[in-house]
Length: 137
Image (cartoon, rainbow, N blue to C red):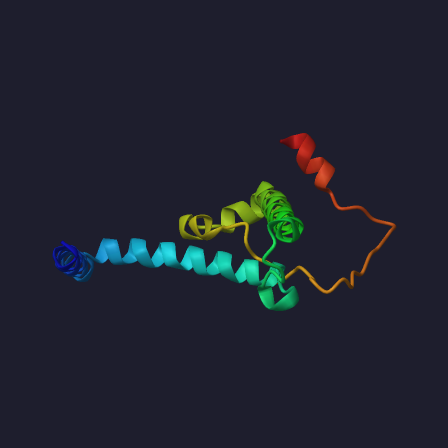
């Protein structure tokens, strides 16, 4: 029975590879999905940089706080980036410069503007216009 399942798996992989090689749309779809996953993994490595991106304990209770903090940082980063993208797109000048391809490529995962090391230059005399964005939404 085990040998039969192995052969069935080989046949299924062969069929998939034939479809993959012959279908340009399938290759693009798979490549696009892999790019999204790789981008997200890169963001996760950026956010969870301490201890070599590893949880230091096998105990579930000791893992809970770092993982929940990681999820909070992910959600916060996506939220703030989405607000910033919406703010840029609200400007008609920028919106007219964007092509359909540019719009399709927008994602809330850029992080080059984020400093993970705890050094922040603050101008306490100005505020981010996030409240204006929230009120408009």
